[in-house]
Amino acid sequence: NEEMVVTISSLGYIKRTKTSEYRQQSRGGKGSKGSKTRDKDFVEHMFVVNNHDYLLLFTEMGRCFWIRGYEIPEGSKTGTGRVMQNLIRMPKEDKVKAYIRIKDLTDEEYINNNYIIFCTRKGVIKKTLVEQFSRIRTNGINAITINEGDMLMEVKLTNGENEIVIANRNGRAIRFPEAKVRSMGRSAAGVRGIKLDDENDFAVGMLSVKEDSEKTIFVVSENGFGKRSEIGEYRTTNRGGKGVKTMSVTEKTGKVAAIKAVSEFDDMMITTKDGIMIRLAVTDVRIMGRAAQGVKCINLGKKSSISDVAVIRRTEEEKRAEEEE
Image (cartoon, rainbow, N blue to C red; front, side, top):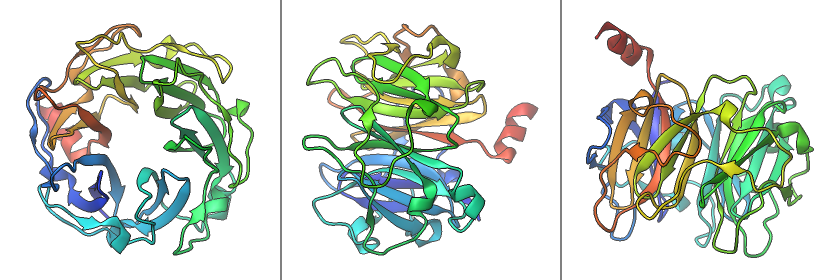
């Protein structure tokens, strides 16, 4: 039941690859070539699963599909993968936007005491019991009602007692207790999580963290800048506000591309739209104030930008090797 890196491209090609194929590099490097995706295609999602995990895939239009880790075709880092519609019955016009992994969908205690939190591009948030997603159907099910002009942006697993952080592309983030969002059914649309600046602004990421978590918040910009800040720097407020500054957005940094919760033994896997990937240790980026613009994490080509950021938990073997150095 080993850990594998799963990649999904913007045109819907999916594959899994051994984590060892992605070696760690130093900050500010050029990275290495990733998937040989087709012209105008790039890796849009990258995450780590165990082969026996249940993977719940959520689409832009708000539908949910299931697949086991071992059902995803295995390929090399530079391989293309298989088109998603060959594995799940997803309409051609829809695409996977978010995902969660669950070890066991038959564990009654777990599925009745944990939730899936949804966030849309327009900052709408919704919470639903995992139990409502435990009966697998090959045609998929409706997970959330998406309002016209909106789309699903992110989903997270949570225990009902966490803190939620939502960031927008203009460099602001809001933090509020999950308890401020009541549990709703699958057909509900949800409530406002963050107030966006204008019609060009949208939510780019959501976190679910424990109130006393020792994790830090890692923000990455479109032009490859990154920074870490303490969670305590984000004061707790009510949902629906504009939040506080999470990164100083300038022409040099570009807009915010992603926000992640990370621990000291994590690595970041950053993917660009021209197929370059870099894996770097979280600790390569020092902790800074909330409003800092960050440091260069990856050197981008002139017309390139960040397409996805994934957190990879270092294996016990990798941790030991680092401690011995």
